[in-house]
Length: 580
Image 1 (spheres, rainbow, N blue to C red):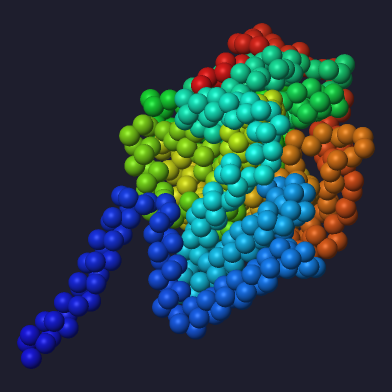
Image 2 (image 1 turned 135 degrees about the vertical axis):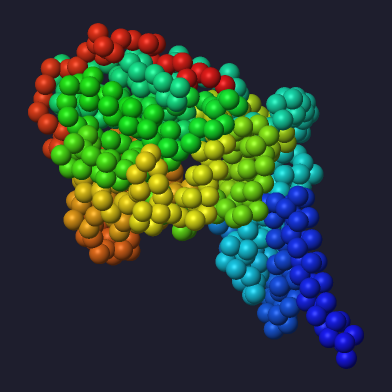
């Protein structure tokens, strides 16, 4: 009797011990779930016989359809595609993948089974939504890796190119491979393709304020008169600021100065190991608060218009809640504000969610503890995995199989000009914002000595999102309407394109893009807003500047670029942006 009870009691304990051991091994060997997510998905599917048999049946049906398609193509008989290719998938865009029977058959087998495996994975029973998406993410990256287009002998374009160039493309491809092997990266653009301050970030201005975290640039006026209220732009510190000042044609800051605004922008310090203890509080107090004070003092005005982009917008929203509590309406130094593709509610943060769980964050924290920061290259690699076909394998094929030179593309150059993240700040940001979503929970965060409640924000908001944004999905960005005070006036925009080109979106003729715009009611959800939003051709920039002109005061003589109290510390783009 006693032995029976002992055995019965030890069973679950042994299983719990085994599970703990497996978790411990995974934490050390596979913290991002690359392998374990696949094993978990397969075990979960086999534990559900009905769904498992359906998956087997679906795969068998695909196999029969593909065999029939292949037979008909080889006999020259009419047939139809088993899998309708996504027109945005550029891998098989060349006509040979359709016109040639053998290449069409190969393409169909790859695409059909890839699609079926992804569907099975995303429908796996017995897993959480996060576990399913994580398994599907790593499976998709493996499927992308084994695409026939990535192998010379399975890529008809690469073979034709080698014959056409009498082997020169293969030699060039080998040279490109050796170049990237030395750089330990599949490069997207030559590291010397541009020079910051010479080719990019060339709008004239001066650094008028600097502390350990940020340089504040004031751009030289390009009009004799400007609006009295200056514009202060808080840029993301996960990248360098000059995405908003790429070239004269693409520069948001130059467009604003040409429209008669006085523009200030943040250029964040690229943190080093000795800044490991820098916190989000410091970015708020020594960053936004210090820049707001410097800007108002420089222009001798009581208020500014505040703009935040990406994580800079998340910080701007945090600052707005903080300042409304600390100063109240009477001493509030921000009259109104703009958000550009910024998350405040992180409950569904886009595809980056696959890296947001306890195991992944703990692994990152262990890595950061050794160095004092998160290396910018590691973050860039994670974001490239989200779009591995276009950001990794496209360059593998073009550089190594085709032997082509890297194109000098300014946005890609900026994208590879990475920055580091201080350990304390980044750990807090990942845990409190992404993992626990506390920014939208009233008074759950204490930052800069104040509890944070977005509902305290009453200043008018202009919010811009992007239709194809996979980093800050537009529906998720829309939730700022719900979280700020219901009486706050809001103008909401959804631009076409993605996280970068939806914002770096200058007016051109003929128009390249379009946008949807409307003023949402406090109780509107995103779909209701969209149903009554007006679609307009072109860039949203003119709509924004018209909104700003109506709110930024009278025209006054243009402010000098520097002053006695704020002398030039450096020419724009400053010194922090050049730090590697």
